[in-house]
Image 1 (cartoon, rainbow, N blue to C red):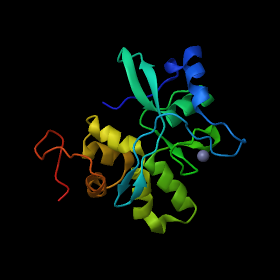
Image 2: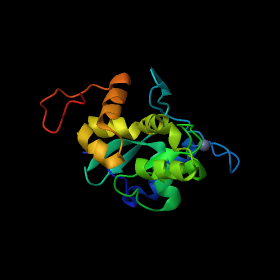
Image 3: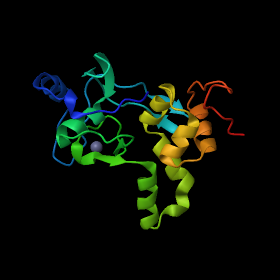
Image 4: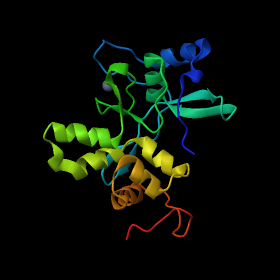
Length: 184
Ligand SMILES: [Zn+2]
């Protein structure tokens, strides 16, 4: 299942490996990841990918695994766990950016609530698609979350999630797989 990220990953050797890969410029600039990144893909909803990748040791799995660099940056900067089922999003819309000032915790429901508070609720579908572009959503699906679970987690309609995953070329599990329901 989807892996949470906790402060247990932080160690001197981790930060010694991490910081040289971040191009830390002026305080408010984007600090882009200089090492490996996820492939850039041209999807029907735009260009996606380009997120920094960093290897961490996962204490739960007892092995090394790849993690998104911006998530590691958030954990180090805040010295805190990423709370269960929350995503780290870029306020700057720049996937390789690791500047903690540009990284915000969000759930879709909070995100959409913010938008409605600001009187921007009219562009709901667009904001849903923007949220779905977060690579963690596709990752969660690949790691076993069902579309129904994603729907109740993020309050985005099943049909929207299904259509989006399909557009992005994420292999969909067959109908009849436990937990999977047709989006109609
Ligand atoms: Zn940035």
